[in-house]
Image 1: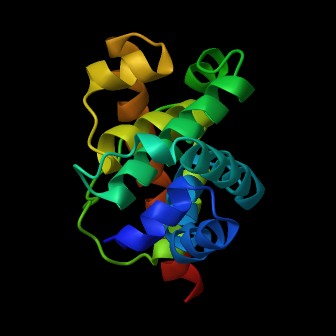
Image 2: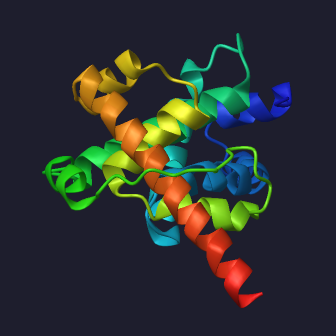
Length: 183
């Protein structure tokens, strides 16, 4: 919950209030940006763009919902903008370069992976897959919403999610098998 005094200071553009807000929320929002980014540097760029927008549009926050939720939406939108900025041919190569593989005896509920390993696996997905996977599986957007956000067809969103999920399962299964062989 954001302190009302802090919010007033932020709306006036107080640099100390901005630093306090950044210091408080940057680690959590960085984690969100990192899920969409391909590298820590890219996540830092997304976070920086998001905070610029947060400070620029702080006066539009009407205190009707969660302030943190409002900021998370800005981070997601910054990640999507970053995605569009860096992807001229975002889906053509992703679809043709990845072969689907059937994964048998794999459970999504398998707790054998650390958060860092899961994050690394998600980050290793091709950009198109990663964006759709994060928006659908983690943020809870519908394929129709994702298609509008990314400027793709609904069917493309669905196939990107399906392929991302299969590829992620394969990466995690490979990691599990590697551990089994190498202790």
